[in-house]
View 1: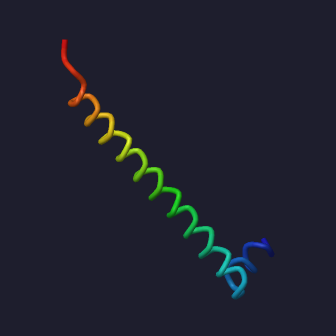
View 2 (view 1 turned 90 degrees about the horizontal axis):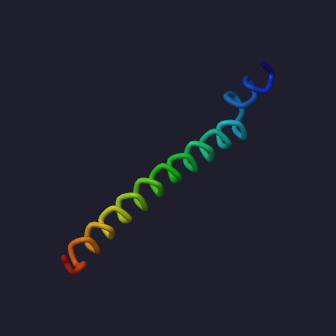
Length: 52
């Protein structure tokens, strides 16, 4: 319980929470970014492939 209180009430704790939230946000952004570009590239390749 003391750790939670220190995490949300001290400057260092709040900065740690902000850094963790920023990193999780970056991870979500990059996963969505990469998946979107992978999907778009596979669609482009499927359209450019010669049809039999």
